[in-house]
Amino acid sequence: MSDLLRLFFVIAFLTLGLAAYFLVVSTLFPNRVARTKSAIQSTPARSFGIGLVNFVFFAVIAIALFSGAEKSGPFIKTLLTIPALLITALLATMLSFGLAGMTSLIGERILPELTSWRQSILGTVCLCFACAPPFVGWFLLFPYAGLVGIGAFILGLFQREPKS
Image 1 (tube, rainbow, N blue to C red):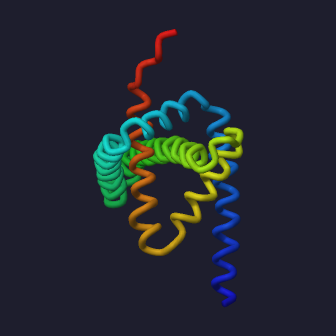
Image 2: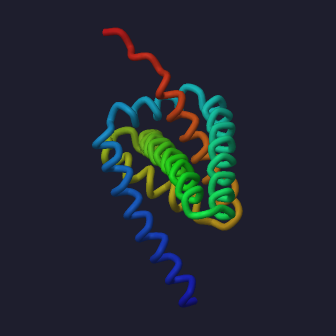
């Protein structure tokens, strides 16, 4: 029972931290998050496909570079580790913006009458607790949300600005 209570508090505190993080990302980069959210709304299946292809592509390259760096000398190790870290940072950035757009969309769909920052917090809480259950949340919902977010972020990069 003690372990279950401890796990609940860990999830609750991580959710609170993620809510603050996504709120700050949405505040600092409102246009990028809005474009990502728009791509999730309009083409979720396309976003998933693009996210899956790009995640696999960049992850394989990063793993290959890390693996090559592990088996080489000090100079080559540094030479291979830097691009691998940059690719990993790129994936983390795409995932951050994608999940910020996803949490914003979830909050908007659940309670549309709330302000945008409350929608973002509510969307984060809902997504975090929905992804917390073993197996279904870990291996189905979170990868789906993450890959759709990555794909929507990439689609949002190439979206044209609406003409005024």
